Amino acid sequence: MEILQIVGFSLVATFLALIVKEQKPNFAFLLIVFVGCAIFLFLIDQIYAIIHMIEKIAVNAKVNIVYVETILKIIGIAYIAEFAAQITKDAGQGAIAAKIEMGGKILILAMAIPILTVLIETIIRMIPS
Image (cartoon, rainbow, N blue to C red):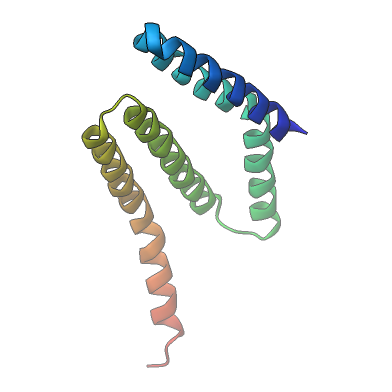
């Protein structure tokens, strides 16, 4: 069970960070960042499997792969923005975290516009004239 490994690793790191934070707050923050990155790297195989499965489903369903790639990029932007915002909040920089979240939302919207355009055009074609 991978979740138990992640939770165990995270709890140990949390206790260490709390202990170290009293003496060296900078080291505690670096420990938190390192643990976040380590968890992400631990999950890389799962992420790859999910992406591969989604691409296979799209090919079988004869969906244009460009749309699937765009959706996967949008999901990636959301996760990366959330990860960066959380680390920034942990550093006590809530204002910067809010800007990261806003930047992620704007990038997601910009990437979604071509898909929304195709969707609207399809709906318009289906409406009888």
